[in-house]
Image (cartoon, rainbow, N blue to C red; front, side, top):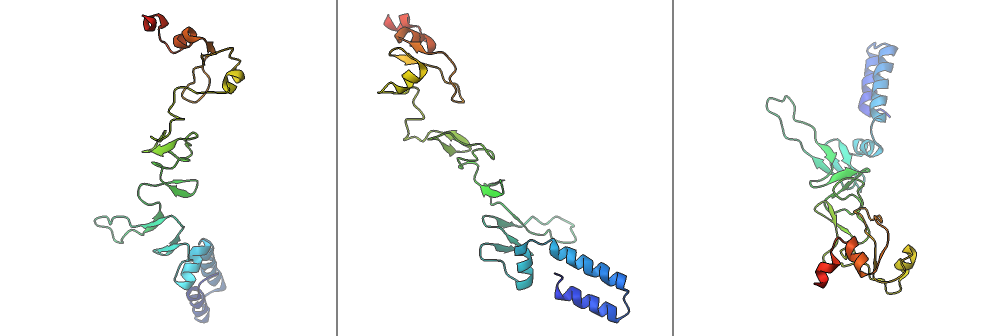
Length: 192
């Protein structure tokens, strides 16, 4: 809906002999300008304040989690740059929300990059927490031999290679010599 000042301008213009076409053009421009505003920006324009979950940034209302960014003034600029809403320092917009990609396990290092189970995001990389041994362990201790049965292993020790993505990258090696060979270790050298 156009603001009172736009309506007042149109009414004055009509009273002073403005054509109906000109009045419609000005009224349409005011209507389009009002429709281009988000509901919270329109509320701010009418009431002079933002809804409780947003804060004022120039003539706009910043969404929750965003801050008002004030760009640096350029030399020789006629007008100062307008502030705008954006993500705080050390955050990035991922799927419409500001997140810390250096610590967010669902957006680790970049948007959409999820850390695996048990891992944390530290400095933008998925890592195992220092107190956690499950995701750091190069072996799986399987007291009930459930993993062995799942792979069809016939005895102990048994092993498979797992790649960086967590996929099985070898056949099952059964027996000490086969496990050592799978790990790239010469069993005879260890026995000596």
